[in-house]
Length: 75
Image (cartoon, rainbow, N blue to C red; front, side):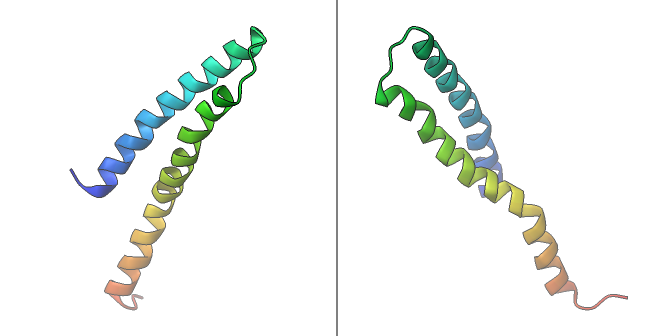
C-alpha cells in the first residue's frame, strides 16, 4: 500500500472515530457529566484529521507543481 493510500485510509477511519467521540461528548453533556477527558476524546482524532486532511488537500497541487517542473515549458 502506498503512503498516500495509507493516509487516505487513516483519514477515513479517523473520521468515524471522531464522529463517535462527538456523539459521546454530546451524550455526556446532555446528562450533565462534564469531564475534561470527554472533551479531549474528540480533540485528539480531530488534530490527526487536520494533518491528514491538509496533506490530502495539498496532493493535487504538489503533483501539478511536480509535473510542471519535470515537463518544462509547454506552449
